[in-house]
Amino acid sequence: MAIIEVKKLSKSFKVKIKEKGLKGSLKSIIKPKYKIVKAVNNISFEVEKGEIIAFIGPNGAGKSTTIKMMTSILYPDKGTIKVLGYDPVKDRKKLSYEIGTVFGQKEQLWTHLTPYDNFKFFGAIYDIPEVAVEKKIEELKTLFELEEFINTPVRNLSLGQRIRCEIVASLIHEPKVLFLDEPTIGLDPVVKENIRTLIKRMNKEFKTTIFLTSHDVGDIEKLCKRVIIINDGQVVLDDTMENLKYHYLNKKIVDAKMKERVNLDDEDGITIIKDKGYNLKIEVDTTKRSVADALKLLNPDNIIDINISNIPLEDIISNIYKNKD
Amino acid sequence: MLTAVKNQLKVTGLSIKYALVREFLNKATFLSNIIFMILNNSCMIIQWIVLFSIKDDMGGYTFKQVLLLWGISAGTYGVSRFFFKKAFELSETINSGKLDAYIVQPKNILLSTITSDIQVSAIGDMLFAFIVYFIYGFNITTFILFIFFCVTGGLMLTAISIILNSLSFWFNNADMVSDVGNSLMVNFATYPDGIFKGITKWLLFTLVPVGIANYIPIKILIEFNPYLLIINISVCLLLTLLAFVIFYKGLRRYSSSNLMSARI
Image (cartoon, rainbow over all chains, first blue to last red; front, side):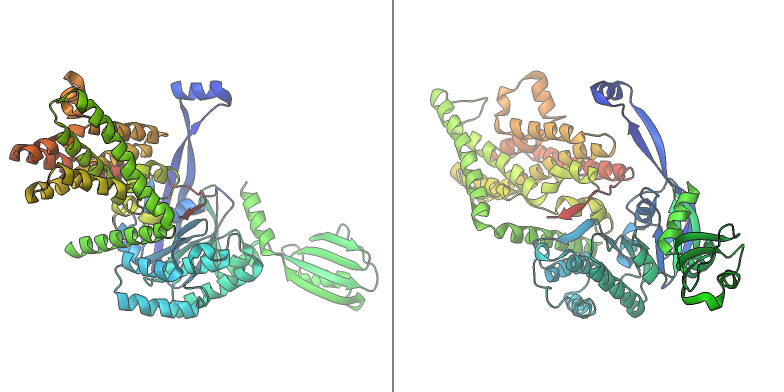
């Protein structure tokens, strides 16, 4: 059964248009002009229990607006949302006991308090008895490796440590669904990897459903099995990561080191990406030509070394964004 | 229902406790904020001493009654700014999208927001209120009533600020309107109502209800009047209810924001 159901959801914002300069400002006071921006336009999708789903799209695509409607922050104009059977508009309080939110760009912790005091405060917000909070903090402290800095004021923590604490604070009440809005923003690769491992572990240990938005392809590739791509407020793709990687663009990259030069100009289904004499990098469109066929053209006896890989996920996603435009 | 209220109060208490912990980090600033506020209010009393040396009666008030008026004004101001500081910055909270953090929590959004910070100097106002009350003269009945009116007045100031700041859900720059409204409530609160006549007096008992929050309590403290007490309580309840209704009505129009922010 779906844990999140979104049906024909829409949300528009009224934005004031102002002409430039002082004259424009005066004009906008006397006769203001507005335009309607459709942030989310008739989107539908479902999320199953225990899934880690990537909800991605370029800036301004409608990701945050959708998450905010699912977490009761914004009211939808049209459509319905059910998260764990609750309507975020009507059942805000009941829903908040069941979900957790981490907005990478917005800090929820008190910076002058230690993570430990913050966690106790969050425990009180969710009406959790003292003993249960202590037990939960102890459990999460070990899982998220917070021992070293749990008693250091948040303002003295590194960004990576702070994000770990933000995630822990959102888990104190054992939410069934966790919304992570760009949790790895601004983090270095090592810390990012660390956070990803912890998110995976959390999903495995607590069976938490995770709804993730990120611009970091690494987050999506390493964490999610399913991806929903949104652009201009509409869902442009809802598929498994496997399908996205292997079938969506049907292209493979062949990087070969040759004994002799090969001329592949004008070959149908093959695009030369790089040709440095004996080092050749080509893109094979598998809808027009199989990889085996492409290898035959290269002549297997002529190959010293070869690497066949998928198109980088980043390129696939960029292409999907561009094609929509 | 009772458990929900208890839990809400527990969170409010913790919120105040943690805000105080932050303020204690800098003891010198903490203490000087309080002391200077008491001194600031005391300086204003000096001008009244000078005025009363010229004339015995000011708008129907004796010097001691003016002292009491200052006590009530400082007390109501102190209660509103200490417990509900964020009600006076609600416009900024709405415009910068900082309500998000409170909406996703299973508590009353308005209460959690407005009690999320304290104004330390307001402790000075509350202490000053008690000092002048004791100079006016202590008796147990007026003392209880005095505290009660500081609370109802504080709630009224807070409610008016919430109502005006909530206009930010509909208009830009509503903070300017709320600043003017809040200033009016404070500026008129320290003058005897007898000096105001006609439309000004009418305004002070209607649109800018300083009269209900400050003048009526003085009249009750001088001579107990149950009808005036009912008016004070009723207006307090009405304004509080109105504040909740307008805030929640506006919340449907809340558009959040993606500005980077930190809770400091």
